[in-house]
Image (cartoon, rainbow, N blue to C red; front, top):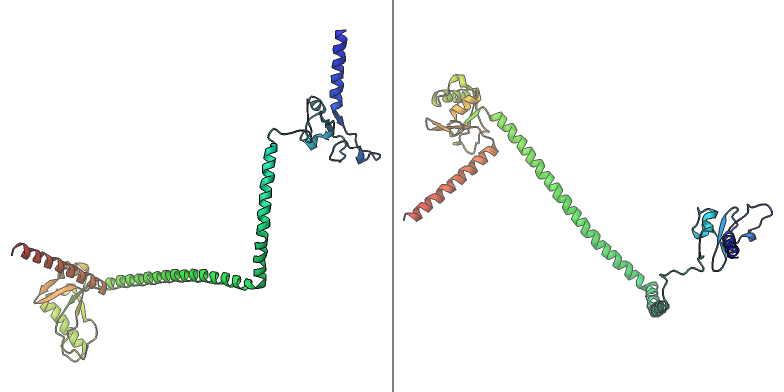
Length: 304
């Protein structure tokens, strides 16, 4: 008897599991969509459906996220609940719902209070304040644009000025380098009286004689000489610098005492410097004189 009862129970459970999953027949010309058991109301031929253990509705595997399961897998599901019957443990409680309802009511009341003000503002804009709003916006935009344009112009001016300065400096450096190259074999003697002879050839001969005899420059080191600049009729007593071209740099260094200057017969023989180098030497002498004057004053104060 017990074995018979157990067999009946097993058969009943097997029948229950067998009936839990059904398969939609393949659609034929005589089939209709009304034959679908799933709440989606779509007929899918050959699709498996699983039954809910509570409401006994059948749902397509694909509609409840079980797509990919076989018929046997579906029959193994126990206490399966459909989306309509399943309640999440994370669902809100009744008091939470009441609080949400109260909050929604408060928001609704505030919106109702705000609606007239919003309508009034829109009416003001429509009735004439549009022009003021647009003018204000244009004015603000103009200010921003003006400031931006001013900054751009200033930046461009600075950049252009920098480019001009750089260009001038580069030009000056090239000019100075060119002048140095032209003068590297030259000597310069100041305050040499100029010849009063009629022709320039005769005056050049007198200057060459002065270089060889008075300045004691050897003939093998001497190439030529000339006067720098043009004569000034308003300054008849002014003597233009005498420029002497030598044979090589060794001669230049020798007769100029390596650039320090050499005094011969009361005349100083110096290098023929370009303007930039002359200014540098002038500033150096000025600074040296300033230091010497400061040292002299300090000695006087310390030794009254």
